[in-house]
Picture 1 (cartoon, one colour):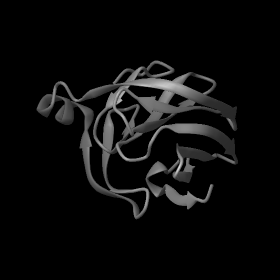
Picture 2: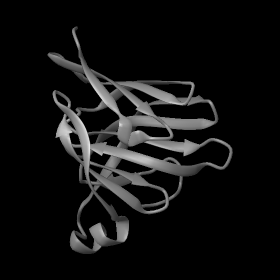
Picture 3: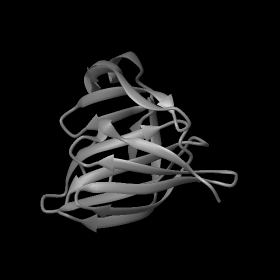
Length: 144
């Protein structure tokens, strides 16, 4: 995964990929939440599945509290991503990729907590993701 900002691709797993190459593989879904099931490295995952990449398309951005956040969709239907960088250095901190989130469409940052929204009719979700501990993310269904 490139360390440039903004990222143009991500791994296809439900995962948080950190700029240093660590990966937290996730299990779950928007209706039941997510949990970390395994920690690995980008090298180990890339070696086992060389074609396991998707393209990213940014939909919305936020810049606050020393971080840049971009959210959007992938080249696969129903998937979304949240990418975070240090705004001073432009260094990628992490990318969250989810296969069942639907595209992320809105984002804001306050006190190093990201709040973003994904989906559309009939299902929309509000996500709360701590910048410094993205695996502690939470998600709630929002009534339209």
